[in-house]
Amino acid sequence: MSRTSKYRTAPLPVETVPRGVPYIIGNEFAERFSFYGMKGILVVFMTQYLLRSSGELDLMSDETATAWYHLFTSAVYFTPLLGALLADIFLGKYMTIISLSLVYCLGHFMLAIDDTRFGLALGLGLIALGAGGIKPCVSAHVGDQFGSRNKYRIPAIFGWFYISINIGAFISNLLTPWLLNNPDYGPQWAFGVPGGLMLLATWVFWLGRWKFVHIQPGGAAFVKETLSREGLTALGKLSLIYVFVAVFWALFDQTGSTWVIQARSMDRTVFGYTLFEAQFQAANPLLILILVPIFTAVVYPSINRIIRLTPVRKIAIGMFITVLAFAVPAVIETNITGGRAVKASSQAARRTSDGDWSPWNMIDGEPDGSGWATGRLSGDGSSAEDGLGNAVIQLRERRAWTISGIEINPYVRGVMDADDDAGEGDTPLPDTDRFAREVTVFAGDSPTGPWNEVAQLSLEQADRFQRVSFDPVEAAYVKLRIDSNWGGNHAAVGRFRVIAAAESPPANAAASAALVWPDVAGIGYKPSIFWQLLAYILITAAEVMISITCLEFSYTQAPRAMKSFVMSFYMLSISFGNLLVAGVNFFIRNEDKTSKLAGASYYWFFTALMLVTAMGFLVVAKFYRERTYIQEDAS
Image (cartoon, rainbow, N blue to C red):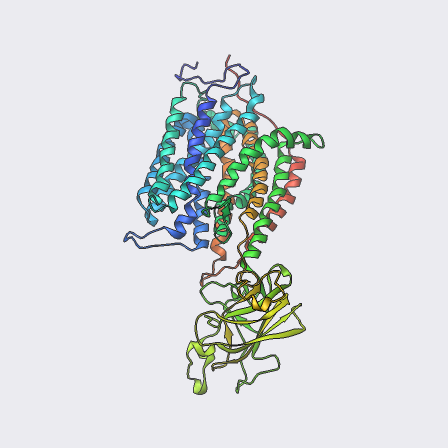
């Protein structure tokens, strides 16, 4: 025992599992329950429950909520730098964990009692300080319990450590969304229960104080070792890996934001029970519990027979799996958002950075009315051979559908200015005079025709969808031609939906008009949530190969006095990854509340980014050289 501490300060020279480990794992279970239970409902809370002090709703848009969610997550993984400095220089890991856990509890308490933006900001700020501050200390504290004789148990214990995290996360991801959506409980209970579990986590950790190895803070020795050639070399080598790992976290942590938002538009019925959108996040911790033993006992030994599976090679493989994982929601989003407009005669409500027109909101668009308009008409408004203007729609999945109708909403905002649509004597016309009046509908197999006329639709001057039905016909593309408008120099269409008949229509399909899927061809449909399960299987497999490996690798590659500090550098990779997502979401949001990366293009952007990152990391994996540091045994 050390003369300067009442606690044991070095590992015992034993081969068994250290006695303090069960207390750390129990603490981690309760703490992760509290964190993931709170974090899992944040996007739903911000977009559906957030209030003003007057009690009125004060909701955020999906993009804004996603951005703030990732800013909070970034802060949670930035403050570990503060916690690591406190632990490694001044307080030691144990006192740092106990002190900041109390701050953590206070943050949960603020979220439970205040549903406003002030309560949200204060509560999340305290949680970011508390949760982030203890993060590098807890995982490093696990490694501190081991000496040279039982260090071979470290990989297995870190696996169990990660399993405890995910048992807590699994239970909380099912419970807290149910509490939030249950009118008998609501946000107070949904945030209060995780707060209670954090208090329990703090108590369990305190109970283990006499069982733990308490590595003393390094003080000046920490600064000396950190600034030494050995310390700077270790930081530099690991930081290079963390830069690449940051991109993985940018994608992975969207399981709690964009994947939750996507789940709203999916069929969430599982074995007769309809899940809340946030509950499906429980798939990740459940899969961790399944995959960790499988990877440890089967996958890793099998790969080792082919190539030597070093930690950096595990990380590299995990990155390529992440590419596949994020491609799945991209495909799902393509199906949800439906077809796309591939051609329009003139202009749209907003333009892309290269000046081209932006088609996304034309099909199943947002209520802002974004759409398209013709070019300036001739003075007498006469129709050209191809009408006053036309648009071509590619149906979903790029294949032919049996379609039986179309709905058009002529209302459009922002396509042209009022003075650009003036009538005789430059007298401004009402907005509704811009609306298309007569539209002819064509069906075809390619975007250039030939076209088969299937219907004509006379539109009213109204902001609503107006439908025309026709005999079922097979088509992969639909063309709309504006034949007349209500006045002025332009004709405009806001949004449209293609109606698909039953996928396998009976012989008397025309008489079976009720068998339509109004959400299939043009406006997307609701894929089963089990498609997201495929994405979760892939992203969780990647997490096993990257996250668990990085936890162990960061500890073993850190010099002895720098364990917590190096762990905080690893946490910074998570912070920067989430900061990247927040920055992207703030950047892509237009003033008219539309997005520069709408629909599946958002997911494809991150998929491509991950692919480039994974290919770059192959170079790092080839040249990285390991050096392991383990705490010395007590004499």
